[in-house]
Image (cartoon, rainbow, N blue to C red; front, top):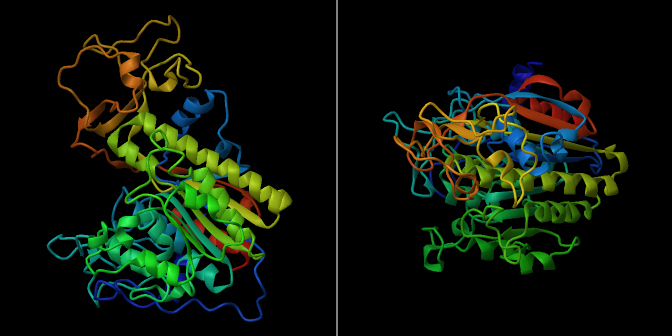
Length: 484
Protein backbone atom coordinates (compact mmCIF):
# COMPACT_ATOMS: atom_id res chain seq x y z
CA UNK A 1 0.00 0.00 0.00
CA UNK A 2 2.75 2.44 -0.97
CA UNK A 3 0.99 5.51 -2.34
CA UNK A 4 3.59 8.09 -1.36
CA UNK A 5 4.87 8.90 -4.85
CA UNK A 6 1.38 9.64 -6.20
CA UNK A 7 0.28 11.79 -3.28
CA UNK A 8 3.60 13.56 -2.86
CA UNK A 9 3.69 14.49 -6.54
CA UNK A 10 0.15 15.81 -6.42
CA UNK A 11 0.82 17.86 -3.32
CA UNK A 12 4.14 19.26 -4.49
CA UNK A 13 2.55 20.45 -7.73
CA UNK A 14 0.53 22.94 -5.69
CA UNK A 15 3.27 23.84 -3.18
CA UNK A 16 2.84 27.32 -1.86
CA UNK A 17 5.14 30.24 -1.18
CA UNK A 18 8.57 29.63 0.32
CA UNK A 19 9.39 30.22 3.96
CA UNK A 20 9.50 33.96 4.70
CA UNK A 21 12.50 35.78 6.08
CA UNK A 22 11.11 38.03 8.83
CA UNK A 23 9.74 36.73 12.11
CA UNK A 24 6.14 37.66 11.49
CA UNK A 25 5.90 35.99 8.09
CA UNK A 26 8.09 32.93 8.48
CA UNK A 27 6.66 30.02 6.55
CA UNK A 28 3.38 31.78 5.77
CA UNK A 29 1.43 30.56 2.73
CA UNK A 30 -0.88 33.17 1.25
CA UNK A 31 -2.53 31.35 -1.64
CA UNK A 32 -5.56 29.23 -0.70
CA UNK A 33 -6.06 25.95 -2.53
CA UNK A 34 -8.66 26.38 -5.27
CA UNK A 35 -12.08 24.85 -4.68
CA UNK A 36 -13.05 22.37 -7.42
CA UNK A 37 -15.21 23.85 -10.17
CA UNK A 38 -18.92 23.20 -9.82
CA UNK A 39 -18.61 22.00 -6.24
CA UNK A 40 -21.44 22.49 -3.77
CA UNK A 41 -21.48 22.93 -0.02
CA UNK A 42 -19.58 19.96 1.49
CA UNK A 43 -21.50 17.37 3.48
CA UNK A 44 -18.70 15.03 4.64
CA UNK A 45 -16.99 15.12 8.03
CA UNK A 46 -13.49 14.03 9.06
CA UNK A 47 -12.34 13.74 12.68
CA UNK A 48 -8.65 12.90 13.01
CA UNK A 49 -7.47 11.76 16.45
CA UNK A 50 -3.75 11.79 17.22
CA UNK A 51 -2.36 10.32 20.43
CA UNK A 52 1.06 11.93 20.64
CA UNK A 53 3.66 9.27 21.44
CA UNK A 54 0.95 6.62 21.85
CA UNK A 55 2.85 3.54 20.75
CA UNK A 56 1.23 0.13 20.84
CA UNK A 57 2.81 -0.80 24.17
CA UNK A 58 1.43 2.39 25.69
CA UNK A 59 -1.98 1.51 24.23
CA UNK A 60 -1.77 -1.97 25.76
CA UNK A 61 -0.73 -0.64 29.17
CA UNK A 62 -3.51 1.98 29.04
CA UNK A 63 -6.06 -0.73 28.23
CA UNK A 64 -5.01 -2.79 31.26
CA UNK A 65 -4.92 0.37 33.38
CA UNK A 66 -8.43 1.45 32.41
CA UNK A 67 -10.41 -1.75 31.79
CA UNK A 68 -8.16 -4.75 32.52
CA UNK A 69 -6.49 -7.29 30.26
CA UNK A 70 -9.71 -8.59 28.72
CA UNK A 71 -11.43 -5.22 28.33
CA UNK A 72 -11.56 -2.88 25.36
CA UNK A 73 -10.69 0.74 24.93
CA UNK A 74 -12.95 2.60 22.52
CA UNK A 75 -10.10 2.75 20.02
CA UNK A 76 -9.81 -1.06 20.22
CA UNK A 77 -13.34 -1.36 18.82
CA UNK A 78 -12.74 0.56 15.59
CA UNK A 79 -13.73 -1.84 12.78
CA UNK A 80 -10.74 -1.17 10.53
CA UNK A 81 -7.11 -1.10 11.63
CA UNK A 82 -3.54 -1.27 10.43
CA UNK A 83 0.03 -0.24 11.15
CA UNK A 84 1.83 3.00 10.30
CA UNK A 85 5.52 3.46 9.48
CA UNK A 86 6.63 6.72 11.07
CA UNK A 87 10.23 7.43 9.96
CA UNK A 88 10.89 10.98 8.77
CA UNK A 89 12.76 12.25 5.70
CA UNK A 90 16.10 12.36 7.53
CA UNK A 91 15.66 10.16 10.62
CA UNK A 92 14.79 6.60 11.52
CA UNK A 93 13.07 7.93 14.64
CA UNK A 94 10.80 10.89 13.95
CA UNK A 95 9.76 13.79 16.09
CA UNK A 96 6.16 15.03 16.12
CA UNK A 97 6.56 17.82 13.57
CA UNK A 98 7.33 15.80 10.41
CA UNK A 99 5.21 12.84 11.46
CA UNK A 100 2.03 14.90 11.90
CA UNK A 101 2.92 16.91 8.80
CA UNK A 102 3.16 13.66 6.83
CA UNK A 103 -0.41 12.81 7.83
CA UNK A 104 -1.59 16.31 6.96
CA UNK A 105 0.29 16.80 3.65
CA UNK A 106 1.31 13.39 2.28
CA UNK A 107 4.96 14.51 2.21
CA UNK A 108 8.00 13.28 4.17
CA UNK A 109 9.87 16.10 5.93
CA UNK A 110 13.00 16.51 8.01
CA UNK A 111 12.80 16.35 11.80
CA UNK A 112 11.65 19.61 13.45
CA UNK A 113 10.13 20.93 10.18
CA UNK A 114 6.42 21.80 10.03
CA UNK A 115 4.50 21.37 6.75
CA UNK A 116 7.32 22.34 4.40
CA UNK A 117 8.89 20.60 1.40
CA UNK A 118 11.41 17.76 1.93
CA UNK A 119 14.40 19.98 1.12
CA UNK A 120 13.60 22.32 4.03
CA UNK A 121 16.29 22.30 6.70
CA UNK A 122 15.60 22.91 10.38
CA UNK A 123 19.24 23.88 11.05
CA UNK A 124 22.01 25.82 9.33
CA UNK A 125 25.30 24.32 8.16
CA UNK A 126 26.73 24.47 11.68
CA UNK A 127 23.77 22.56 13.09
CA UNK A 128 22.22 25.59 14.78
CA UNK A 129 18.42 25.61 14.74
CA UNK A 130 16.68 28.22 12.58
CA UNK A 131 15.02 29.73 15.59
CA UNK A 132 15.87 32.34 18.19
CA UNK A 133 13.90 32.05 21.40
CA UNK A 134 10.29 31.66 20.30
CA UNK A 135 10.65 33.69 17.07
CA UNK A 136 11.51 32.09 13.75
CA UNK A 137 14.63 33.09 11.86
CA UNK A 138 13.77 30.89 8.89
CA UNK A 139 15.82 32.00 5.86
CA UNK A 140 13.90 34.05 3.30
CA UNK A 141 15.00 31.94 0.36
CA UNK A 142 16.69 28.71 -0.54
CA UNK A 143 15.17 26.66 2.25
CA UNK A 144 12.15 24.91 0.90
CA UNK A 145 8.54 25.79 0.26
CA UNK A 146 5.36 25.41 2.26
CA UNK A 147 3.16 22.42 1.42
CA UNK A 148 -0.66 22.70 1.62
CA UNK A 149 -2.23 20.84 4.51
CA UNK A 150 -5.44 18.85 4.63
CA UNK A 151 -7.02 21.50 6.86
CA UNK A 152 -6.12 24.24 4.36
CA UNK A 153 -7.46 22.26 1.42
CA UNK A 154 -10.72 21.45 3.19
CA UNK A 155 -11.06 25.07 4.28
CA UNK A 156 -10.67 26.17 0.66
CA UNK A 157 -13.34 23.67 -0.38
CA UNK A 158 -15.85 25.20 2.02
CA UNK A 159 -15.52 22.90 5.04
CA UNK A 160 -15.59 24.01 8.66
CA UNK A 161 -12.31 23.45 10.48
CA UNK A 162 -11.22 22.86 14.06
CA UNK A 163 -8.08 22.10 16.07
CA UNK A 164 -8.23 20.71 19.63
CA UNK A 165 -5.25 19.75 21.79
CA UNK A 166 -4.07 19.39 25.37
CA UNK A 167 -0.71 20.94 24.45
CA UNK A 168 0.02 24.50 23.44
CA UNK A 169 -2.01 25.20 20.29
CA UNK A 170 1.30 26.31 18.74
CA UNK A 171 3.00 22.98 19.54
CA UNK A 172 4.22 20.74 16.72
CA UNK A 173 1.20 18.49 16.20
CA UNK A 174 -1.56 21.13 16.06
CA UNK A 175 0.73 23.56 14.22
CA UNK A 176 1.28 21.04 11.42
CA UNK A 177 -2.40 21.37 10.49
CA UNK A 178 -2.38 25.14 9.89
CA UNK A 179 1.19 26.53 9.83
CA UNK A 180 4.39 26.33 7.79
CA UNK A 181 7.79 26.94 9.35
CA UNK A 182 11.34 25.63 9.18
CA UNK A 183 11.61 24.84 12.88
CA UNK A 184 8.85 23.85 15.27
CA UNK A 185 10.21 26.01 18.10
CA UNK A 186 9.23 29.27 16.38
CA UNK A 187 5.97 29.31 18.31
CA UNK A 188 5.45 33.08 18.26
CA UNK A 189 5.56 33.01 14.47
CA UNK A 190 3.31 29.96 14.43
CA UNK A 191 0.77 31.80 16.61
CA UNK A 192 0.74 34.74 14.20
CA UNK A 193 -0.12 32.40 11.32
CA UNK A 194 -3.36 31.50 13.12
CA UNK A 195 -4.78 35.00 13.64
CA UNK A 196 -6.83 36.40 10.71
CA UNK A 197 -5.95 39.83 9.25
CA UNK A 198 -2.78 40.17 11.31
CA UNK A 199 0.84 40.33 10.19
CA UNK A 200 2.11 36.84 9.46
CA UNK A 201 -1.38 35.31 9.04
CA UNK A 202 -1.51 32.22 6.85
CA UNK A 203 -3.75 33.38 4.00
CA UNK A 204 -4.57 29.80 3.07
CA UNK A 205 -6.79 29.74 6.16
CA UNK A 206 -9.10 32.33 4.54
CA UNK A 207 -11.18 33.77 7.40
CA UNK A 208 -9.45 31.53 9.96
CA UNK A 209 -9.85 28.18 11.68
CA UNK A 210 -13.38 27.99 13.12
CA UNK A 211 -12.66 26.22 16.43
CA UNK A 212 -9.37 26.44 18.37
CA UNK A 213 -9.06 24.81 21.82
CA UNK A 214 -5.89 24.14 23.78
CA UNK A 215 -3.13 25.76 25.80
CA UNK A 216 -0.33 28.14 24.86
CA UNK A 217 -1.72 31.56 25.75
CA UNK A 218 1.85 32.81 26.32
CA UNK A 219 2.56 32.87 22.59
CA UNK A 220 -0.43 35.13 21.93
CA UNK A 221 0.45 37.77 24.52
CA UNK A 222 3.28 40.31 24.79
CA UNK A 223 5.96 40.00 27.44
CA UNK A 224 4.47 43.09 29.12
CA UNK A 225 1.20 41.14 29.56
CA UNK A 226 2.89 38.04 30.97
CA UNK A 227 3.36 36.34 27.61
CA UNK A 228 6.39 35.54 25.45
CA UNK A 229 5.81 37.78 22.44
CA UNK A 230 8.65 40.22 21.90
CA UNK A 231 6.79 42.19 19.24
CA UNK A 232 4.31 43.69 21.69
CA UNK A 233 1.27 42.24 19.92
CA UNK A 234 -1.89 41.11 21.71
CA UNK A 235 -3.07 38.26 19.51
CA UNK A 236 -5.93 37.45 21.88
CA UNK A 237 -7.26 40.94 21.23
CA UNK A 238 -6.71 40.45 17.51
CA UNK A 239 -8.74 37.24 17.64
CA UNK A 240 -11.61 39.15 19.24
CA UNK A 241 -11.37 41.89 16.61
CA UNK A 242 -11.57 39.18 13.94
CA UNK A 243 -14.90 38.01 15.40
CA UNK A 244 -13.82 35.15 17.66
CA UNK A 245 -15.47 34.34 20.99
CA UNK A 246 -12.60 33.90 23.46
CA UNK A 247 -12.43 31.53 26.44
CA UNK A 248 -9.62 31.62 29.01
CA UNK A 249 -11.04 29.11 31.51
CA UNK A 250 -13.73 26.49 32.08
CA UNK A 251 -16.35 29.11 32.99
CA UNK A 252 -15.79 30.93 29.69
CA UNK A 253 -15.79 27.59 27.87
CA UNK A 254 -19.17 26.62 29.31
CA UNK A 255 -20.70 29.82 27.92
CA UNK A 256 -19.75 28.95 24.33
CA UNK A 257 -22.83 27.86 22.38
CA UNK A 258 -23.16 25.75 19.27
CA UNK A 259 -24.24 28.88 17.42
CA UNK A 260 -20.94 30.65 18.03
CA UNK A 261 -19.43 31.64 14.68
CA UNK A 262 -15.76 31.25 15.61
CA UNK A 263 -14.26 30.29 18.96
CA UNK A 264 -10.79 30.18 20.50
CA UNK A 265 -10.04 28.79 23.95
CA UNK A 266 -6.56 29.09 25.45
CA UNK A 267 -6.85 27.47 28.85
CA UNK A 268 -3.30 27.65 30.13
CA UNK A 269 -0.24 29.83 29.61
CA UNK A 270 1.67 26.75 28.41
CA UNK A 271 0.40 23.19 28.01
CA UNK A 272 -2.86 22.19 29.66
CA UNK A 273 -2.46 20.18 32.86
CA UNK A 274 -2.05 16.43 32.88
CA UNK A 275 -5.44 14.80 33.33
CA UNK A 276 -4.37 13.50 36.76
CA UNK A 277 -3.60 17.08 37.85
CA UNK A 278 -6.40 18.89 35.99
CA UNK A 279 -8.81 21.01 38.02
CA UNK A 280 -12.17 20.44 36.25
CA UNK A 281 -13.37 23.83 37.48
CA UNK A 282 -10.52 25.55 35.62
CA UNK A 283 -9.78 23.45 32.52
CA UNK A 284 -12.17 21.43 30.33
CA UNK A 285 -11.30 17.82 29.62
CA UNK A 286 -10.25 16.67 26.18
CA UNK A 287 -13.63 14.94 25.81
CA UNK A 288 -15.44 18.17 26.69
CA UNK A 289 -13.39 20.20 24.22
CA UNK A 290 -13.97 17.59 21.51
CA UNK A 291 -17.73 17.55 22.11
CA UNK A 292 -17.99 21.33 22.08
CA UNK A 293 -15.92 21.56 18.90
CA UNK A 294 -18.23 19.09 17.14
CA UNK A 295 -21.29 21.03 18.32
CA UNK A 296 -19.96 24.32 16.94
CA UNK A 297 -18.83 22.82 13.65
CA UNK A 298 -21.98 20.74 13.10
CA UNK A 299 -24.18 23.79 13.71
CA UNK A 300 -22.74 25.36 10.55
CA UNK A 301 -24.71 22.78 8.54
CA UNK A 302 -21.79 21.85 6.32
CA UNK A 303 -19.03 19.28 6.38
CA UNK A 304 -16.05 19.79 8.65
CA UNK A 305 -12.51 18.72 9.49
CA UNK A 306 -11.53 18.40 13.16
CA UNK A 307 -8.13 17.39 14.52
CA UNK A 308 -8.00 16.23 18.15
CA UNK A 309 -4.67 15.61 19.88
CA UNK A 310 -4.03 13.87 23.18
CA UNK A 311 -0.73 15.67 23.38
CA UNK A 312 0.43 15.18 26.94
CA UNK A 313 0.73 11.41 26.61
CA UNK A 314 4.06 12.19 24.97
CA UNK A 315 5.23 14.56 27.70
CA UNK A 316 4.57 12.07 30.48
CA UNK A 317 6.44 9.38 28.57
CA UNK A 318 9.44 11.70 28.15
CA UNK A 319 9.34 12.11 31.95
CA UNK A 320 8.88 8.33 32.40
CA UNK A 321 5.94 9.08 34.70
CA UNK A 322 3.87 6.16 33.49
CA UNK A 323 0.76 6.79 35.57
CA UNK A 324 0.33 10.26 34.03
CA UNK A 325 0.87 8.84 30.54
CA UNK A 326 -1.72 6.09 30.99
CA UNK A 327 -4.30 8.45 32.48
CA UNK A 328 -3.86 10.88 29.59
CA UNK A 329 -4.25 7.96 27.17
CA UNK A 330 -7.46 6.99 28.96
CA UNK A 331 -8.68 10.60 28.69
CA UNK A 332 -7.84 10.54 24.99
CA UNK A 333 -9.91 7.38 24.62
CA UNK A 334 -12.79 9.10 26.45
CA UNK A 335 -12.65 11.87 23.84
CA UNK A 336 -12.89 9.29 21.05
CA UNK A 337 -15.98 7.76 22.66
CA UNK A 338 -17.58 11.16 23.16
CA UNK A 339 -16.99 11.99 19.50
CA UNK A 340 -18.37 8.69 18.21
CA UNK A 341 -21.54 9.08 20.28
CA UNK A 342 -22.09 12.67 19.21
CA UNK A 343 -21.28 12.04 15.54
CA UNK A 344 -23.62 9.04 15.39
CA UNK A 345 -26.39 11.30 16.63
CA UNK A 346 -25.58 13.84 13.91
CA UNK A 347 -24.90 11.30 11.16
CA UNK A 348 -26.49 7.91 12.04
CA UNK A 349 -24.24 5.08 10.95
CA UNK A 350 -21.49 7.56 10.06
CA UNK A 351 -22.39 7.34 6.38
CA UNK A 352 -20.84 10.74 5.78
CA UNK A 353 -18.28 10.82 8.57
CA UNK A 354 -14.77 9.35 8.75
CA UNK A 355 -13.08 8.90 12.12
CA UNK A 356 -9.36 8.10 12.15
CA UNK A 357 -7.31 7.32 15.28
CA UNK A 358 -3.54 7.00 15.24
CA UNK A 359 -0.26 8.14 16.79
CA UNK A 360 2.69 10.07 15.44
CA UNK A 361 5.42 7.89 16.93
CA UNK A 362 6.30 5.38 19.62
CA UNK A 363 8.26 5.68 22.89
CA UNK A 364 10.50 3.23 24.72
CA UNK A 365 7.94 2.00 27.28
CA UNK A 366 7.95 -1.78 27.82
CA UNK A 367 6.00 -4.33 29.89
CA UNK A 368 8.48 -6.42 31.89
CA UNK A 369 8.59 -9.98 33.16
CA UNK A 370 5.99 -12.72 33.32
CA UNK A 371 3.55 -10.85 35.50
CA UNK A 372 0.29 -12.40 36.59
CA UNK A 373 -2.84 -10.66 35.39
CA UNK A 374 -3.52 -7.53 37.41
CA UNK A 375 -6.88 -6.31 36.15
CA UNK A 376 -7.60 -2.60 35.93
CA UNK A 377 -5.96 -0.04 38.15
CA UNK A 378 -7.91 1.26 41.13
CA UNK A 379 -7.24 3.03 44.40
CA UNK A 380 -6.94 -0.40 45.98
CA UNK A 381 -4.67 -1.90 43.32
CA UNK A 382 -1.91 -0.36 41.16
CA UNK A 383 -2.60 -2.91 38.43
CA UNK A 384 -0.18 -2.60 35.53
CA UNK A 385 1.60 0.23 37.36
CA UNK A 386 2.67 -2.10 40.16
CA UNK A 387 5.47 -4.60 40.73
CA UNK A 388 5.82 -7.93 38.93
CA UNK A 389 4.25 -10.92 40.69
CA UNK A 390 4.75 -14.37 39.20
CA UNK A 391 1.78 -15.69 37.23
CA UNK A 392 2.19 -19.21 38.68
CA UNK A 393 3.19 -18.77 42.30
CA UNK A 394 1.99 -15.21 42.86
CA UNK A 395 5.27 -14.44 44.59
CA UNK A 396 7.16 -11.24 43.94
CA UNK A 397 9.67 -11.50 41.09
CA UNK A 398 13.23 -10.31 41.74
CA UNK A 399 15.96 -9.02 39.45
CA UNK A 400 19.56 -10.28 39.47
CA UNK A 401 20.38 -8.04 42.44
CA UNK A 402 17.56 -9.53 44.52
CA UNK A 403 15.27 -6.54 44.24
CA UNK A 404 11.66 -6.43 43.00
CA UNK A 405 10.95 -4.54 39.79
CA UNK A 406 7.95 -2.86 38.17
CA UNK A 407 5.86 -4.17 35.29
CA UNK A 408 6.40 -0.95 33.34
CA UNK A 409 9.92 0.16 32.46
CA UNK A 410 11.62 2.22 29.76
CA UNK A 411 14.44 1.59 27.31
CA UNK A 412 15.96 4.91 28.33
CA UNK A 413 15.12 7.62 30.83
CA UNK A 414 16.22 9.57 33.86
CA UNK A 415 15.73 6.94 36.59
CA UNK A 416 18.50 4.35 36.51
CA UNK A 417 19.97 4.15 39.99
CA UNK A 418 23.33 2.42 40.23
CA UNK A 419 22.38 0.87 43.54
CA UNK A 420 18.77 0.84 44.63
CA UNK A 421 16.88 -0.62 47.52
CA UNK A 422 13.69 -2.66 47.26
CA UNK A 423 10.72 -0.96 45.60
CA UNK A 424 7.14 -1.12 46.88
CA UNK A 425 3.81 -1.05 45.07
CA UNK A 426 2.94 2.19 46.84
CA UNK A 427 6.15 3.78 45.61
CA UNK A 428 5.82 2.83 41.94
CA UNK A 429 2.08 3.62 41.85
CA UNK A 430 2.62 7.26 42.83
CA UNK A 431 1.81 9.65 39.98
CA UNK A 432 5.18 11.36 40.38
CA UNK A 433 7.21 8.13 40.23
CA UNK A 434 9.62 7.86 37.31
CA UNK A 435 9.80 4.26 36.15
CA UNK A 436 13.24 2.72 35.82
CA UNK A 437 15.11 2.78 32.52
CA UNK A 438 17.92 0.75 30.97
CA UNK A 439 19.93 3.63 29.47
CA UNK A 440 20.40 6.68 31.70
CA UNK A 441 19.29 10.03 30.29
CA UNK A 442 18.87 13.54 31.64
CA UNK A 443 15.61 14.49 33.40
CA UNK A 444 12.74 14.42 30.90
CA UNK A 445 15.09 13.07 28.25
CA UNK A 446 13.50 9.71 27.44
CA UNK A 447 13.37 9.46 23.66
CA UNK A 448 10.86 8.52 21.03
CA UNK A 449 10.95 5.02 19.59
CA UNK A 450 10.92 4.04 15.93
CA UNK A 451 8.36 1.21 16.06
CA UNK A 452 5.28 1.20 13.84
CA UNK A 453 2.11 2.59 15.43
CA UNK A 454 -1.57 1.69 15.35
CA UNK A 455 -4.15 3.25 13.04
CA UNK A 456 -7.88 2.60 13.30
CA UNK A 457 -10.84 3.96 11.36
CA UNK A 458 -14.61 3.81 11.20
CA UNK A 459 -17.33 5.36 9.08
CA UNK A 460 -17.19 6.72 5.54
CA UNK A 461 -14.11 5.38 3.71
CA UNK A 462 -12.80 3.45 6.72
CA UNK A 463 -12.43 0.24 4.69
CA UNK A 464 -9.43 1.78 2.92
CA UNK A 465 -7.40 1.80 6.16
CA UNK A 466 -5.75 -1.60 6.51
CA UNK A 467 -2.39 -3.33 6.37
CA UNK A 468 0.99 -1.67 6.74
CA UNK A 469 1.04 1.90 5.48
CA UNK A 470 3.36 4.85 5.44
CA UNK A 471 2.15 7.89 7.38
CA UNK A 472 2.08 9.80 4.10
CA UNK A 473 -0.56 7.41 2.71
CA UNK A 474 -3.16 8.59 5.20
CA UNK A 475 -3.43 12.04 3.63
CA UNK A 476 -4.62 10.60 0.32
CA UNK A 477 -6.97 8.07 1.92
CA UNK A 478 -8.76 10.84 3.84
CA UNK A 479 -9.10 12.95 0.69
CA UNK A 480 -10.42 9.92 -1.18
CA UNK A 481 -13.07 9.33 1.49
CA UNK A 482 -14.56 12.79 1.00
CA UNK A 483 -13.91 13.14 -2.72
CA UNK A 484 -11.52 16.08 -2.36
